Length: 334
Image (tube, rainbow, N blue to C red; front, top):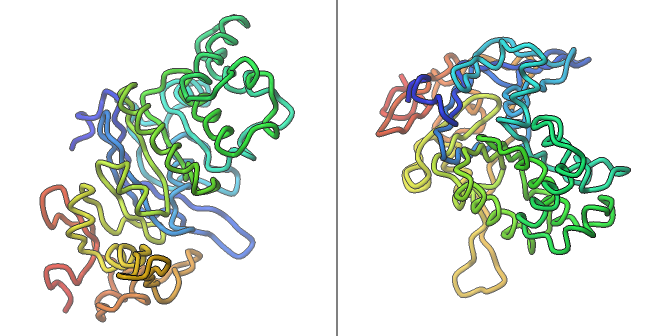
């Protein structure tokens, strides 16, 4: 998919590298990451903690924390524009109005001393130039649309008076109230009780369908992207390990890390209703402060060869719309 094919609700990231300065050294959080989000589709971005998922979301919306964080290289194309080249004013217009971001923890994303209705309507009031009464009406409409009962009462409530699931629904309402074309959902269920996670995912799925949204769904949980995504990008230690359509990835994963992640998903033991089988991934991700050359998964990989330590594998086509960064695929280790 070319950049010019993504002019109506699609987004294209090319060669994105993001670094963060720490007292210990420079963290290379993202290393030349490229991906596409097609119009009206959901791209699942999956990887373990520290893989660079949230850094990617921050870079897309121009919120890489400075001065410690900076975009070192790359392009982020949206509606024919490179977002990384926009000035602060133009970027504020895009953020919230065209691209919305749901943060992963509603308890900290919502201002504890402001009423829910004010927070849901805030971006719409600013971007759409609404009056106070219009803002109130829009907030109430969206609170109802995300299936929160008694919107009038909830609009006057404070965040601590809502349950975790209700706060997350309020965040979704706030994100969608301006009518964005792209929604970035960063771990939207990770802080919620299991009992309410399915309802939030169903809501996001319904909103995408009803509004024709494009969506970037960020998570560490493969079962979540299996339910929600049309296509999946697997991120490991700041690099793309594998990218494929959802069904192809789950039934034909090629990268050793992707296969290990799939194996690590808990599965019920046959004949044991309360027993689950779990297979962990040995070792730990490398430090991203001055990382060694070569494949960043090499120290944990059962298929490792000398070339893996010496040279980083490129992301290559191994099938229809299926790309993998691994020397062991197609017998390329030597």
